[in-house]
Amino acid sequence: MKTSVRVLALLAAGLMLLSATGCEKLRARDQLNKGVLAYKNAKYEEAIDHFQSAVSLDPALLNARLYLATAFAQQYIPGADAPDNNKMAEQAIDQYKEVLQRDPKNVNSVKGIAYLYLQMKQFDKAKEFYRKATELDPNDPEPYYSVAVID
Image 1 (cartoon, helix red, strand yellow):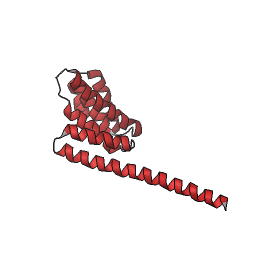
Image 2 (cartoon, rainbow, N blue to C red):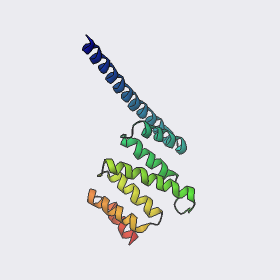
Image 3 (tube, rainbow, N blue to C red):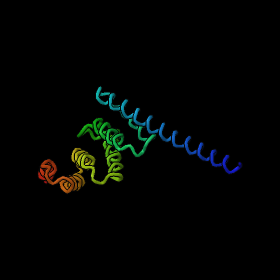
Image 4 (tube, one colour):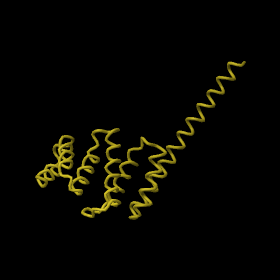
């Protein structure tokens, strides 16, 4: 009798843990959807908040990280050399790199990093990432062109 009670208690605890995890994933998707809506309405700071919430609720949700990186990049103003502005670009690059740790062949992240480095006038890093993009998608002419522009 005691063994069956323990088994039931363990099953109940496992179900609670699974449902909590499931709830977190649902809340993360909800935050992602709210972020996308804010982004589409050009409310980038609001979108960033939603995307950050989504990432904290479900760190494996790559679309949330990609949108977060894109929202940070959207806030970056090329040529404006101010600490807050450069921080936006660095935060975007960090999120793109997080995506690449989980999905090394994510060409959008590679191209996003390359573009930001180009805009920040960090030409060696930009070329490095554009070359990675050519390896991932050799039929895409844009990275080749970008490397030529840098040269």
